[in-house]
Image 1 (cartoon, one colour):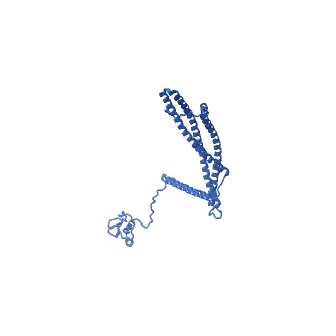
Image 2: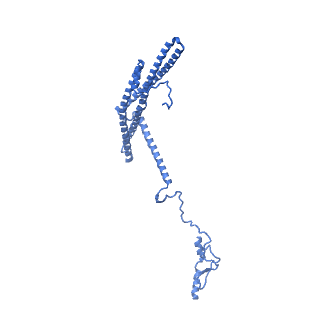
Image 3: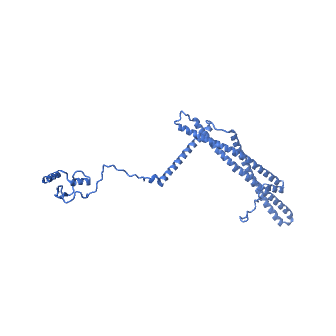
Length: 353
């Protein structure tokens, strides 16, 4: 037994110190540079079988230093972007950013398409003026459009002259009314000429009354022709301007398609895009051409009906006034349902109306 204990004691002497190995584990240092306890020698007590350091400190006690960081291990940087929420659903911030990006991209695409279309149309207009490009011509429709514009110019001239006539005639009526009042006043102050002044006053009053009837007929004529020229015809001309713009765009894309050669086209997608744009603008052009034809047909029918009525009114009213036929003038206004309005009448309050 004594020999066995001596051999074990010799083996323990050859083994490394437990304090050195424990310190290496807890401190992260190599070798035996840090030792816990006052001595590196150990002894084995007989009978107990426990291992106790000579300094009275257990080699398995908690370390007095914090564990060192392993600098050889790679570090993972923290991402500033928050991860998406569970189940793969984006947060409201992510969805808002996505919609903003889509809106910006849509605006950029619209601006790009507008710039390309404007450039092509401007180029087409310049080439047409220089005689280097052929334009699509509908001879029958173009003649009708030119005739409509000429008709509008002539109607506007009639409207301007009628307004001038109405304005001058209104001054005549106002003057006649003032003259009638002056004659009536003089009839009261001059008994020797009372009969003559009274006769002239009544004549001027009758002329004023008939003049107001003619003014009502003139104002009705002016209002109807103004509506025809500046609203009905203008609406058709607006469609015509849209048709002319569509014609320029159609010719511009048609010229692009004609100048596109399959052997020089870099890809089939480019040729397909050109054909698609041409077909789209051709469809738009044909649709507007059909709309213009229909609108001009209805406008012509409406124009004839309106002007037939207004010309009869103007003729009958002027003929009745200057012939002195007051009854015919009144019947003319009643025939066309014209409300009689005196230019010198004072408009009542809204309660009276």
